[in-house]
Length: 226
Image (cartoon, rainbow, N blue to C red):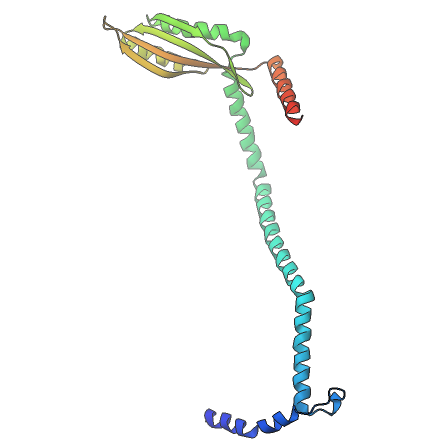
């Protein structure tokens, strides 16, 4: 049925007549043209007009629209993130206060410069109290960090296994922070053990040292700009 209808439509179109309509057209008087050429020219002009608008105007507008849509997505994501932060603001403040409290507690475990002699004496007494014999107890130069300083101490002592273990436990239980690194144990001929380690203790910088450190950093920064 459909094939018959399409065939009927083709039979109803006079292609020879259409071809004759496009011949001998007077470009100076298109008003006298047959309907088919006028429709074809109108369709071509319409297509060229749309293409011109697209090339010179609409294309940029589409690109701008896509950019604005992308910016809208980013702004929405930023808004959602900030809204979450605002909702959890009190929790963030509580966590910050807890961090400050923990940091303050850790800072109290660091002696100041005046207390370092007492701390070194405590470490020495911890070994003597366990019956250990010190062969070396040599504090090194401070290694200054951002707000604290490290003091390495070369330690070498001898004693029985149990006493050495208790000494290490005593150092770990000290109220001040002391770490034992690079531990090496060697057996002696008399059955005792020799323990060699690098102990490290820490102290916080006083205001004078912090001021000196800030001045040095500022001077270095200005030197890099030159």
